[in-house]
Image (cartoon, rainbow, N blue to C red; front, side):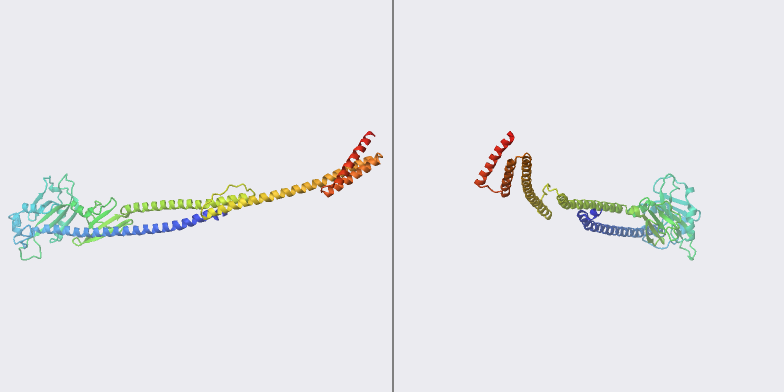
Length: 455
């Protein structure tokens, strides 16, 4: 581990990764955070803008239907001739007329004044007679018409428009539609005492709940999202959760994991509240964040791979030099030359090759000189050993001759021994006289040898 931690490869790889990875990760995280914050901020701003316009359009929508309900008080359907109706009670009760037209025609005028109005009703107060008009020839069940429920807020506030939350169109069986009902009293203003309103009749008209769809379509609400149109008391006038007409106690409270937006609706003295699931809202952002993280991981992996590759490419020649150095250090000079190059590592390899070659040459020269010296010493030793062996041999022969009473032979052998000692000691070329003396001694020894042999 110590060798690994002190390795140039590890140090270079660590430095390369730190220099490359840390800025990459820091920049990526910072960019991702900035991008996420920017997108979230823009998303919230866009939603707030849409909710603002939604509240504004809802207020205008209710105001428009409020104006439709006031058609009973104008002289013509286009709004001209505005003034008090001096004989509303007589017209309704005796002539069954509103604004100089029959009640049925007036209801048709109301019905076709807006494409979203589906049904129109007028209930005469004097005898409770019901007049109605509808766009389609639908079967009508008067017992299912909740007039008693509708008249409660109108009796409490006779001069105010009553708005009834979204409900089923149950009085027209098999339609299965959802409508929003508006109601307004027709008050006779011909009397002198106007403090107590004299209600002649009541106008009701149903508006298809799909009129809200264009307003809410831009929000693209999901299954987890919530939308409420509430009055000041928390009663739901419209909801995508199916709880219209109910009072939602926590409608104005925020919920965890939900982005809550609201906008005032002055006409209702209420609000439009939108709660959007953050998970669904930022789903695309989450996908983008995941893609960025995957890209960061891929870039990091590529950077790590490149760092390892470059580090190995740099350190492998150095490792090769170290390996060959270890072999040379152990005494093995039979190493392959390292590949060279033009960089610093190549120059190092070239220098190492030259060093090994010179070291091999030097060792060869020193080894040969030592061998020659040893050979010379050996030869000198041999030269010393051989005369001694010869002297000892001659002395043994002489002693045998003396022991055999061959004194003349002994003297001859002694002379031979001295002559050989002189020749070996001098180790130079012998003069001719010496050579002849040696041959004389050899001849004499041969003669005496023959005599000794015969004896």
